[in-house]
Amino acid sequence: MREQMDRSIASGREPIRRAWRASLGGITAVVMFGAFINVLKFAMPLYTLQILDRIPASRSVETLVMLTLIALLAITAGIALEAVRRRMLAQWGAWIEREFGPRLFLAGISGRDNRRPVSASDALGDLSTLRSFVARSAAAWLDVVWAPVFVIAVCLVHPVLGLILVAALALLLVLAIAQERMTRKPRRASGNASSDAKGIVATAERNSETVGALSMAPNLTELWRRSIETRLDESDRSEARIVVFATLVQGLYRCLYIGGLGAGIWLVIEDTLTLGGVIAANIIMRFGFRLVARAARKWRALMNARRAYRRLAAQLSVTAAADSSVAESELNAPLVLENVAFRYPGQSEPVFRRIDVSAAAGEVLCIIGPSASGKSTFSRLLTGILSPRTGQVRLGDIEIGRLPPAMQARVVGYLPQEIRLFRGSVRANIARMGDGEFEDAVAAARLAHIHDTIVRLPQGYDTEIDDETPCLSGGERKRIALARAYYGRPRLIVLDEPEANLDRRSRKALIKAIQTLKAHGSTIVVTTQATRLGKVADTVLILGEGRAAIRSGDDGRLQDEGGPEDDASNRQVNRMIPE
Image (cartoon, rainbow, N blue to C red; front, side, top):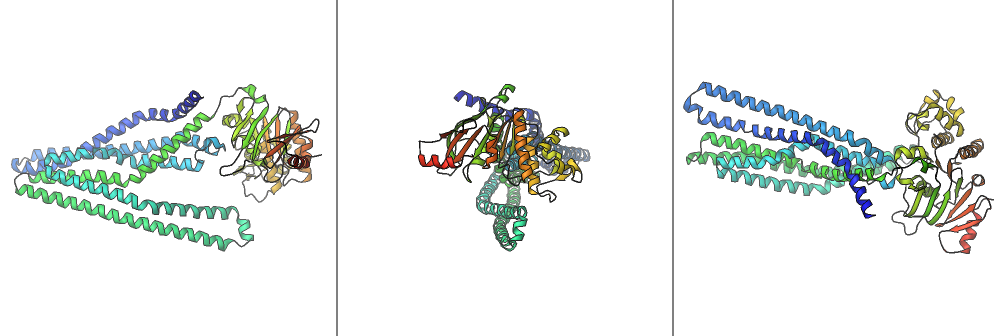
């Protein structure tokens, strides 16, 4: 087991390693460009030193012209290399997002809890943070390693000037650390308040009918105003501190200029340094200070990118290691729930425990139970959205939650209790937002008893709909979602409260569809309290108070699962058995 876990982790890290290997050549070029860029910065102080100390004595115009041309060429080359480096870093950042964005999005919205260290929006936000750092801030941290070179160069001109530069850099680091610590709390509070405000707006828009009917707008507006006030107050506090520190850094830079120039002139008076050396050293001091100051301004970006990289590495590792290889023969194996128990985080009692049930291909399993008995949780376990706390949910020998996404799309059809349609055509919604065959979409729509309604829409199956489309009733939306579950006639169909919002004809069509799909060899799992669905089931699983009972469709006998014998509990379970 330990060796298998180690192999899984190693395989999960492979995408990161592969990306680093693919980027190695570009990273090397960027580092080399950085070296040339910083070396070429010495052209200006060397030019200053030469024209102030040697040209006046030699009075050589040719030498002046030649030195000027060399300095201009060095400066131009440095600017060109900087532009190329920035372009390379921007392209590298874009490549990172293209390489990992689809994979993170797929893992984040796949709905499997064992695949989601973070949500899709958080993972993509981390990816955007990493790309932004590479494109905008990485150059500053690549250059800061050259700051000691500038310090050494100033010390070579004169140790006193070197000490002045070292003191200025030390004060700069102190200011940068103090700014980060003093602005951390207000920045975090501002971010939380901003998230709360966005959440209020999103909730109000999503429930606009309830807001309007119950006149909740003034109350929600007041809640939003309080969040905004908090965000503005904390943001103002943070910005005020940032302005103070920025002013102090600017003042330190000017003090460095004055101190370096004043000390240099004193050294000239003492005949230990030339005027050209003073100005050249002053230029180098300012270059070194700017390198560190620029990196200090990007400190927060570095920390955010570091945290984002760690989270992304964890997400990619889990994503790469989660799937299992599946043989086609496994798809016809029975659905098996073995010793399954589940409890949500923070709950003291499990939703259910020790459930053992199976359903072979061509059999119908019906789950019945009162409200809050765990029917929806059970359906999520069957589709791999949730993982059991103990036990296994398997298709043959393969856990449902470890099916590769492409395989799961063929195997599982699902109707959730809360229906959501996606922005796109009716055909695309039925085909699960893919480019499926039109005939398959029509076949699924006919099974769901929605085909006639679709063809009466303005553009038929090409009519654009979304979750708020007013031309569709609740029952019609439900039947489109049923067609989406039926699409491709998957091996395992999980229906959560399928009869809700359906009229009598649609309920009859639902029973007929279940019987049709059963004849085609699909295992159909239905979660509902409706007794008519229990009549077409081969096995009925009754949930209640953390316990489960199984009734065979052949003999109607009840088998209690999930605890010691309890006559009172069994009597309660028996009352839920459909006659």
